[in-house]
Length: 361
Image (cartoon, rainbow, N blue to C red):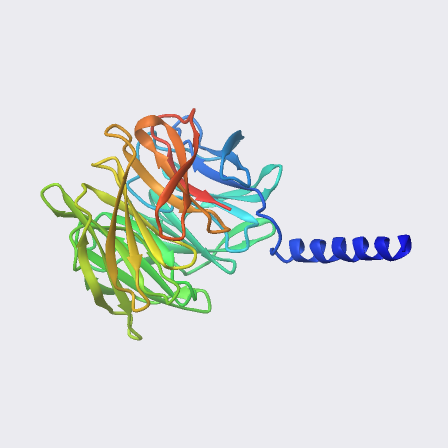
């Protein structure tokens, strides 16, 4: 009987270990990252994430480049690679981008290389291919990400479309076949087909909403964009279908937030909800994303009149939304409920003025 009991316990432990290794066990810890963006020396500020979503400061790691000391006016200035093994960060004032190896006990700087243009403000990665948006030169440039760091991709630099102004974000589509750049100054959105690592010439589409800024993709590769200026004191979100020729077709929108300056937008990991950070109203607006990509406003979560929320990110496990709250120099975290509502779970401060970008794993 005793031997049988031991066998049962051993078998149960083996099953539990296998499930945990496959990601099916209890929630595992991760990390949240943001940039100090300091002109005296840029660094990544790290916060350890517990299973309940709470955050603990876990040090800063120099990027080897320089920040601007002021907001970058972009989304995605720091990102985690798709496999979770690397963190990529722009150094806007020194025209470089840095690669870190990510581990449970912190970050290791691998290298810092030229971004291929001036004033890099946004970066994206898909299966080892990296592209940087150089806002100052109005270009995008490619790099290869390897275990040893980043290597510039010769001949990969492309100009944005003619007339494009104030570019805000670059990001790969979920399948990695297209790059998208929003340009809030010209109310345009550029798309670039990607073939064997190289971006094609851009296809420019007029934005349906005014001042397209931050964006993300739903699980069917439909583009969800924040419209930062939908009218006096108003902002919105719009969804698009990406056509085979690179053009964009409107699905729905602009859907008003009834808030000001919805500049940043992320989509939940299950693709069911979208969230805009409304810098002008100190709030986060919540949208449902239907199966066909249409949007509907659920409401807004208030953070405070002086909060001035900026960039957002969703944890790798999809349970938590984290927001860089510029006005309070901190990161705030929220549990994403099944109905898309947000429950506060974390607040961690000590960030310098001018901190930029946020990413999580």
